[in-house]
Length: 111
Length: 115
Image (cartoon, rainbow over all chains, first blue to last red; front, top):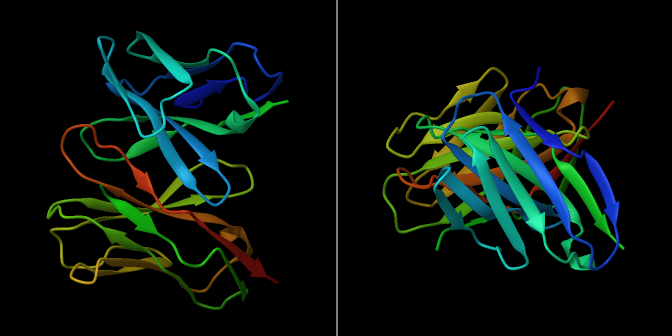
């Protein structure tokens, strides 16, 4: 089984809809991250969390919110989706080794 | 703020050739980590190689090696004996430990290995 899983893998939604992307990990890592990938821009950090009580904004947090339900679960929400949030979204986990482990990604399309 | 720049949006070479991908970064920090990630069509992000800034020796992993020039803030990836399976997007990334350990990525280079 994969160490970092994301659901759904693909999602098409309409402008104004609320959507949640979920991430689960079995690696036992404290740190979890949400990144967004756009063509020509690489990956950019949306939010990150050190533990259930510690949530931090990243580079591009506007329009997004997160919830760390447990050490193993970190969800990303778009309260009112807009077309420029169409992107590939990655969850990642990390520990003190400085390496991050990525999930398989969620491709989100907002029409 | 740290920035990472990959100046080659696309590259293409023949199978078995050697190819070098460029990456430059900007930081005022002295202690940091640099990474190359590979993203094949499956879109999974795969760590290729990692370099600690305090180590002068260039990292190597089988056919993959880096040329780390700290003073020039340059971190290139060399792929020797390229294979069809090396076809992918390659991202250079930067991290400052400790603390948040956020990754800052470059724009990516799309590498195609032709048969």
